[in-house]
Image (cartoon, rainbow, N blue to C red; front, side, top):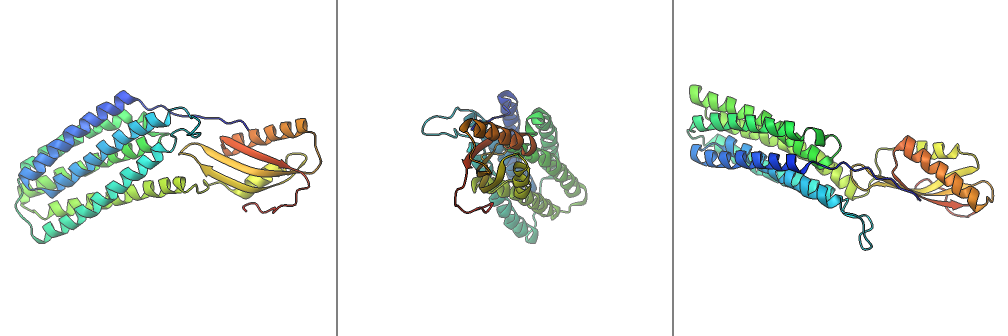
Length: 296
């Protein structure tokens, strides 16, 4: 039956500029972190590096997902973005766990840190990340990958503020253990941020049903004249916007094919307008002896 696609095209130029800004931050923070001996700077650099990955993946996956379907790939590359989001967030999780181990070791064996590097590179990161946030704000509303990248950038601003505060404490109060504490806080945040994206992308890849009340769907369809029931429902998300549904429809009478077609169009319209289901496959039945459970 008919289907409908709505896809938001991400601005390649804005994403490219954001990638360039983040590469500058990452490289400068890695060099600064090594020279100054600050793990907080290195963890902030990793955070920024994960942004570079997130942005590149978002851009590449978005381009891939816009490629048309073909015979061997009837869904096109729509899932590319979800696989990308899963890969990126899993990498982030691994980096965060590694940083926690390093920070604990450094907390137990603190060393002096060249705090001027930490302060100035932290400030540079705040400025460039704020610019990046403004660049991709619009694209982040309806694209899971860009949203992931956008959230990373927002937290980069926050983590860089923490890094600057840490640098000031080290410079004026010589509290060097604060470097480890900031590193652990950044890492914990990374774990929480990536967990949500991992959970959602796995749910989509496993074809779990989106958050819809199936009984409400069944009752709404059942209110249409001549429809006895709907059963054997499969419902899943192809990516973060397209919901697919296939189901069997029992009719109360032995209707003409033309009438059945009109009924199916009505059901399709209802599912689209009320439940935002973009692609529907319906199997009309009459007097068929099969299991009538909603989910078989």
